[in-house]
Image (cartoon, each protein chain N blue to C red):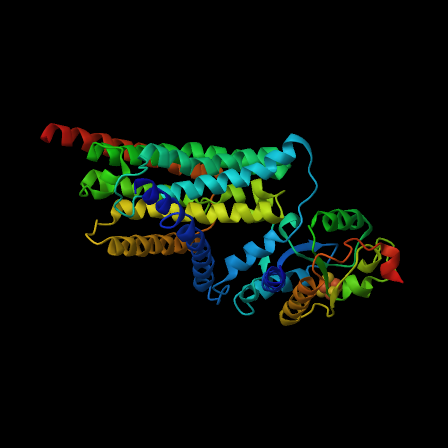
Amino acid sequence: MNLWKRLMCYCRRRSPWLFHLNSGSCNGCDIEIVAALAPRYDAEQLGVRLEGSPRHADILCVTGPVTRNAVCAIKTVYGQVCGPKAVVAIGSCPATTNVFIDSRTLDGPLGKHIPVDVFVPGCPPRPDAIIEGVAKAAQILAERGDEVPEVITAAEVQA
Amino acid sequence: MSILTALARLLIFPGILFAVPAAWFFLWVERKSVAMMQGRIGPPFMQPFFDFIKLLGKSTPQRTGVAGALMRAWPLIAVSTAAGAVGLLPVLPSSGGFQGDLILLLALLEVPSICIIAAGFTSRSIFGEIGSAREAVLSVSYNVVFLLAIISVAASQHTFRLEALAQAPATSLRWIGILAVLICLPAKLHLNPFSLPNAEQEIYSGPMVEFAGPELAMWELSHGLEWVAATGLVATLIAPQMAFWGLSALAFVALSFGIVLLLSALAAATARLAIDTTVRFYWQCTIIFAVLAVSSALLMRLRS
Ligand code: SF4
């Protein structure tokens, strides 16, 4: 039993599958995610795979400052990712809404709506920083196991 | 003794005990060779195993009723039929026991693809349904060539029995058949350029879109087993029969590996084709191949 748990921990750490969600980003962060998977940085060495469907993913990578229209989609997609799961906020936008702060089309930052595990700052962050963030999230996934309650409400996250 | 041999074939070689690690290995070779052709290092050797275990530990969405039961059943059916197909391959000369024939092998090879079609429609996701429709169209078009090829191989040797087919010497008709099977394999294994049923970018990986956790793990495994079965089928048709069983097993593994490399290189070098181009390609192949097969079969009849 214990052995199985340790194996599971190890495999979770070695096989983070990502789903990339754009919540109104300027596209700067998005191309950096792609760059992290491209030959120079090659995140697949860590087992990272960009998945087409949120059902297949372990880690939700969110870019962008969360526009009003995106809120509903973010919550839906977060719900569609099966547990155990982690969220990585990529760029300064989801963390603080960045230069778009005070815009009335926004309803950010991301932490208001879903619990965020790792923030990768930068505008846009470098691909190596993104890879480090994903590796940290994979570590969190492995340590967290199945025990932790999955949905933390928005109010708790803000407090 | 004969039951023991049959069980050994089904459970050890080339059955489950060999097939599952081989499936993971082939999945790794597929990803690694794509990575290497793109100038990357690619995933570590154990990656498909890590993915499999991780997926087993994930939760699945709550599904009730018939649709839920069916969605759990499809991947299991796909895995078991693919494993059965691998177990049937006549790698080792058997002494009695259960000997399947080519028709059973073909049927078992076809079931995973039918499961994929059904799974996409069961998931009731619009992307899944589009993917399933594409898979259905694709399987109708490549299967004509595939079946023609296999039938012509069988006709050239006047038998449907796998054992006899593997031992018979190769004729020119058989080589044409093997070529046609090779042309069909990328579509059967959903590889580029015929990977349109499970296009990640356009339709969110198609029929698999709603599957998560252990179900997805089973789909991955069945995909790997299909690799083993399909390449193994070609390998047994090509491989010369050796006197010593170890040698023939080795030849089987080496040939399968070579075919995997060939197909992965093709997948890495090409881009996804649209559905009409794919269908046209396979129907043109069908016509060319049908003319070749029928004429050479007639010639052989006239000569003998
Ligand atoms: S953090 Fe910068 S690069 Fe990234 S989405 Fe925001 S503005 Fe664009």
